[in-house]
Amino acid sequence: MPFNINLWENDEGIIQFIRLSKFSAIGISALAFSQFVLRTLFKVASFKLVGFIAWVLLEITLMALLLSLIYQNDGDVFWPLFIECLTYASLVIIIPYAMALLIIYVIQSRQKRNTKMALLSETDLIGIPDENNVIKLSIPLGSLLYFESADNYVVVQYVDDTKIKKKLIRNTLKNLERSLNDAVVKRCHRSYIVNLKSIKLIEKVSGKFFIHIKNSEVLIPISANYIPQFKAHIA
Image (cartoon, rainbow, N blue to C red; front, side):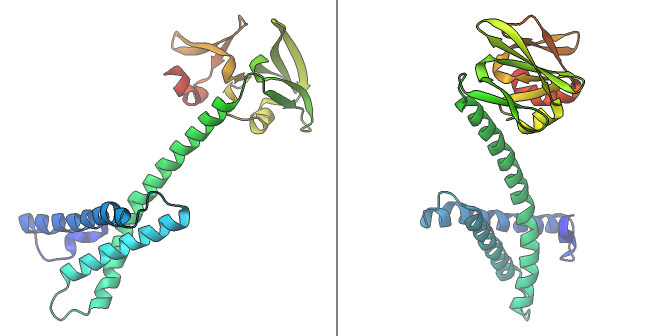
């Protein structure tokens, strides 16, 4: 079992189950007291990073203190027991908090990208650089359709006065993918990057996904490697 907690005492069966359940209950009680009582008492609604770390240390200390007081036997020296409980409490708390922080980070990153995308207007200009990072073409975001690879060049497909036009720029899709905002354009194939605002619909045909582009009859494939990036659009 984690941290060998089943070996802390010489017991087994229902007695061991009760002891381990009590250990879990102590941890839950400490966290509940911290989150619902202390935060309400001190009117803590949210944390910055330093405050969050300090609060986690407080919870670890509180849990270790409870464990020490409950499991201390007659004749035991308090501080060595407290240090041992502090170690176990740290291991118990840090793992779920680390997972929670990772999930929060992923969610917030997605929200930031979506917000950034929503704030971009169709009339905002997007600058398209060459291989030396020199802007060669600036067009309204709403006019950009997609980029297509052509050896050492990229073909920029865009709309100008209802007509589809092309611009050849010496660059690679890989460079463009790095330099342009991924909330605006997204790689879907080794030969294509699409403007997310130009997508009319995504269609599944014979097990493969294809992008229909506004103002164009071209069907752009989505490679299997890039399908996860389009999950939100496919769903």
